[in-house]
Length: 489
Image (cartoon, rainbow, N blue to C red; front, side, top):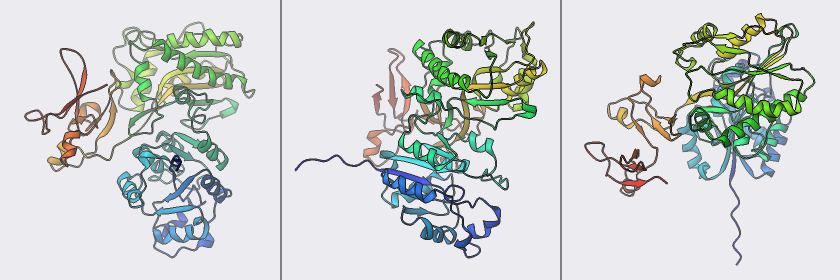
């Protein structure tokens, strides 16, 4: 008998309120909490929701509704509108509680680790749930919020965006396109790192057009803190900041930026006069990091856009001995930038439309401060593009064993070594802006201990004689493991 390949398992974990139903309304809270009986006639389903679920089903996806609302509210709505398309429902999900979702999926005999899976929703809670599950996420925007809800982030664009979704969808059509063409719908720089092309950039905050003058912020990739899907570009961010970075990496970044710039320059809504960048301090290593990238981009842009003036606009004061990264608050960062970066003398910026390129976007303090300086000189439209956005931190679902032994509940956070690019789990200590004990491990289980029914995570070590790296399950007095080691390939 001929062996047939097994069909790939595919799942959508999809939110209910604000994603399938137009019910992100505080007036419905008593129903959602199960305090009163749900009147299904009051529940408005988004136009196109059932058609989307039907098409997703045709694409081979099993749809599972994951909602924080009470089952007395969720179940009648699903029975009335979505039972034909949804195979399971998790209510009172306590998002972003990954353990509760994983336990539910296990009860359904669903293993998302070996499957294609997306988490879809309209809130940071959905996105951080998906990131904790290490699957791609889609932040939806199908309605205009009537009220601002602090916990859920309903109506808070910046908070929801900074949660770090893989994708963003404003309608079901674009949501379907993401499912059909996941790589081509990645952010511009992330797509390039995956070997494909995308023109997509994300707004970390809404555009502002006071008195007809545009202020716009865009980011081209995500720099993750903690758990995330496989597409985030954190390792590339750290590689970009290393002295030993490769020309291949610079060319990839150049090409991605060029792809997005060409889209911007082809758009007739605004005519751009100047392309510039945020330089590095003289003491930054690698030296002239952004300047080198800027020159690579300019060499190409001048061939297709000779009218665009590609020039340096900003300079750092001499002798600056601190950095933006060391400033603890957004206000401190604004003050630091304001005091230490200046406009070059002799520039005529009045009425000019300017594109600025920077490497990292955190709070937007650098962008805000530089934009104020440009506005003071009469600049008209300003587009601030950052290669990477530092998105919110998402802890793993692993307890710190050291803290647990001392009666404390602290979750480990996935980190990346800035120098080596190696991932590790850390109970982040105060010196690294955390409140943990400093314990760390590789996240790789010791196979010898596992055979004996024990979960022991190994640590990464370096052989002092050969420089070769290896995993170790350290035994006493250095740990409580068995002493097993294995080389890292």
